[in-house]
Image (tube, rainbow, N blue to C red; front, side, top):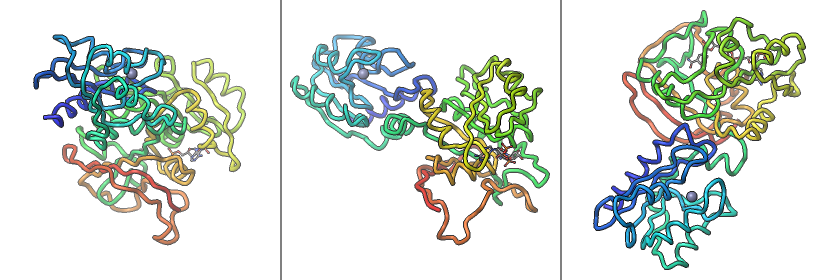
Length: 362
Ligand SMILES: NC(=O)c1ccc[n+]([C@@H]2O[C@H](COP(=O)([O-])OP(=O)(O)OC[C@H]3O[C@@H](n4cnc5c(N)ncnc54)[C@H](OP(=O)(O)O)[C@@H]3O)[C@@H](O)[C@H]2O)c1
Ligand SMILES: [Zn+2]
């Protein structure tokens, strides 16, 4: 039964997806006499934490009850008072904790406080499943830089566009909907100027009730067309153009449209992606979804900013000399490959999604 309760807490935590940045996703369930009497989750940045929400929502007195919490309860005052205090005060007698707090200054303290108050604590319960909720938070809190997901959709013969550059559509409707969920989940979305010129995308989230990401265009020479969808909709969605050369007239025009122009020139005259990630971290952008194209993907991998690679594979073959997902200077020998670790694989409609963790290489 304990696993069922914790899995329910995990489900609840997911409801906060897209809205809690840069806070973690957390779910909590309180059980008494083998019955769930309260549920809560962290719904939005600045709102009550999951544990306090559960305590508040309780249908009956919680004293003597058991709390299942996907993340170690906090013990410091941030935007909200510490949850450990509320748990102790409410008379909870046992707490199951999933993930521990990744912040080295806090880790273990919340649990210690509960134990000192005489509460029985089970640590690391369904830890792996709970940890999966917060790849983004764990990364951001440690590095102060966004968690970067490189996503692309390719045919079974590894093409992301035909030779003439056309790419609509490679995957089916369900996979495209899954991409919308990713856009909702990530705080930023990034593409190279090549993709803007080829596809004129909006890069927003079209899910009903979804949260659109901050749009980041990597465009050294400010080639972005004044009439592009991105420029035309800049008043609606926060938009950043990362550049590497001054062009006062164009900068002025873009800024007038509400676009932020960041000068981040690298040694090769293009946008310095490492500096861009640092700056995004400073702006509290905890996650970035890279949606191409092949040239940006190559630089992102070689700069080492990629944390996860999500590949959608369609049951189609383009043949010929279509575009590959990653161009640039490829490996000379298979031993020089970028290395990934498997996270997950599943069917999404007629397509397949494979998620990998990037572990370096080359
Ligand atoms: N199937 C899919 O999942 C998918 C997704 C996206 C795109 N696509 C397709 O991919 C094609 C466009 O991709 P692309 O490879 O031509 O262009 P891209 O990767 O979107 O953009 C590359 C451009 O970004 C600029 N840039 C600035 N700083 C950079 C840096 N540090 N590293 C790399 N690039 C930097 C460069 O131009 P400047 O030097 O002028 O700044 C570079 O030419 C289109 O055909 C599109 O339809 C497919
Ligand atoms: Zn808390």
